[in-house]
Length: 152
Image (cartoon, rainbow, N blue to C red; front, top):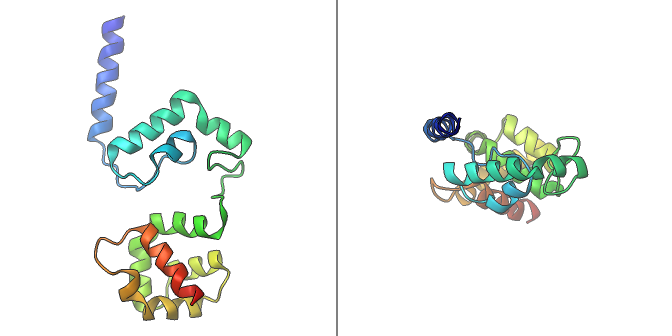
């Protein structure tokens, strides 16, 4: 029985390591997600998901509305956190829309930021070189810079 368990554990691990992990943070909320937030790659995501699953912190967080979870499945933590969560999953699309000055991501961000989408499109286009200073711009950096130019 132990051999079957060990073989299935090794096979599951091999499958997890071979599966592509393209999302920046696809582990949701919970203690594991909070502990490994900001780290990208397969290993931090596996560790976050394992921590969430092993200790039930995701279930507890959803039930209690703690650990970055919301019982209704919404992103919590205010406008900045919602904008960051949106840009983490849509950064490339936002870059294309920001260069053009209009698009769906700008409309969505305008809703999150509670501002006019035409105004946000104009700001994004005018400040594109600042927002995306290099090809390795990450969502956190772009979000912080976006808040700077919107407030100016």
